[in-house]
Length: 72
Image 1 (tube, rainbow, N blue to C red):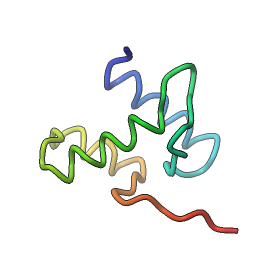
Image 2: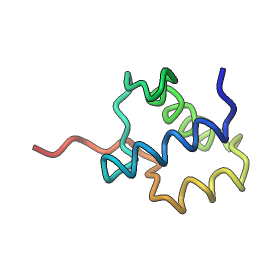
Image 3: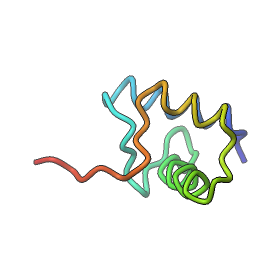
């Protein structure tokens, strides 16, 4: 399995291409299940178990802690 930093790099790659960090739940990026990873980060923060430095890194790239509804 990929490390946190490797998967975070995939999220940055996704954001650069798509313009947001709202990854669909089943989305895979370079064979990594990025959608599941994003959901895990949200759950860890909700349980106050996500490292503060990692939270900061996510916030800095525009990560939203709640899933955003798709706009038409």
